[in-house]
Amino acid sequence: MTYLLFCASLFVGIFRSDGKLTTRIGRNSDAVRFVLETLVEYGAPEKILVDGSPHLGTDNLVRLLRNMRQDLRKAGGEVRFGAKMTKLHQADGYVTGVDVTYTEAKERNMGETSRSPSADEKLETIMGDVIVLATGHSARDVYEELHAEGVKLEPKGFAAGFRIEHPQRIINKIQYGKEWGPSVVTGKGTTDAANNEQFESSQLDDSHPTIGTSSPHQGRLPVASYRLATDKAFDGKENRGVYSFCMCPGGQIVMASTDPSELCVNGMSFSKRDSLWANSALVVTIGPDDAVLDSYRTKHGVLAGLAFQRDMEHRASIMGGSDLTVPVQRLTDFMDGKSSTSAPSSSYRLGVKPSPCHEIYPAPMVNALRDAITNHFEKQMPGFLCEDALLHAVETRTSSPVRISRDPQTLQAIGVKKLYPTGEGAGFAGGIVSAAVDGLMVADSILGDLMGNTESANKKQKSVGFDY
Figure 1 (spheres, rainbow, N blue to C red):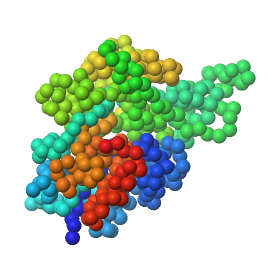
Figure 2 (figure 1 turned 90 degrees about the horizontal axis):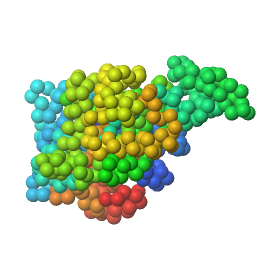
Figure 3 (figure 1 turned 180 degrees about the horizontal axis):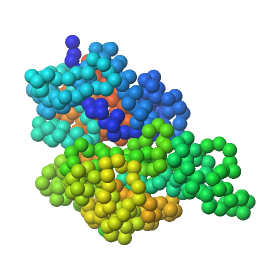
Figure 4 (figure 1 turned 45 degrees about the vertical axis):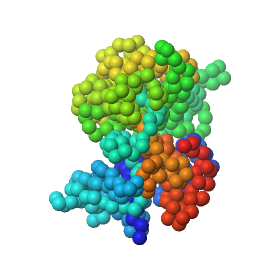
């Protein structure tokens, strides 16, 4: 019998994602369709099969993942919450197992199926013939352990910046205009009232009367979203990429870190997308050989990106007071290089503190962000730069800054046989769908290896458009 050990961060999909299913690897490919259809099978709404920008919502993800865990257990698998991989075991070029430490953890709404370790069970070595490493992109201790064990890692580009939040009514007006903006209806009284108030004094062109709080059009529009990007943001020396990421209409800003000394935020939306706010990451690209990483590269080598992320998060934590309070800055103050003395309301629930957030990042990143906002984004979305726009510091974990090197044919880690890195944390995906497709490829490769045939895995790899 072959023992398969799957080291994964299941909680990431629940607490740190709102279920966006957009992908750039081929929406109509067989693998992507299979992923979407599987999600529907486990409880996702069928509309994700036809929507142009399918979205599950954090609330739907919780139920969907619970259903998946139940099926895994029915098939004989175990899901161990509170388990943390701390060491990788190797022998003669093969991976043989992992050390795991346990902390007390309970799985909600699952009765007696949760596994809570006893006092003598806090450390365990689990042996396996095949190990799939599917960690989240914030599993820094895993990268450090792999590096210490001699597993080949390589730096990769990533991005860092802030999470920006506007009142949703402002984004509705920018995107839909005065004529169509009043047609946005969420079904939530306070949110719809705020949207109507935005348009109370609006005037249409001469062919339409003043609309007050009603729209001249039939039907309901969803809350507006946006996507912004430029590769020509001047940082004082050269052009950089700056873009919005993980835009959450009708959403809220949440904490993405658990250590108060390392402060990082993220965004999410529930399936109804009916909050008063719209938020998005606003980030600057950082290349593997980027000059902003020079000092970190000298000290940390291939893990320079991790060290940079930690440093920015530590600076944000100190600025906020080291208690998970998030430093914030009006976008207008950020552009002027002055600290905010007040702030509009925020969806972040643990508290915000007006701060000089422009002092956190290196000057080239701040310059690029300012140039992108002034010369690109404000032109694309007039009104985006306003006093009600609030930057929250910091968003650093858009993707992993390192990749676990793997063989493009076998999909096994280079130099360590039977170890299969996969997904976003391994550096081979950029979201839920692409991570799932990468997981399919790894599963197919493992099956082919067990059967002495890798041809099917190679064909699938080429069909989904990944570039290794």
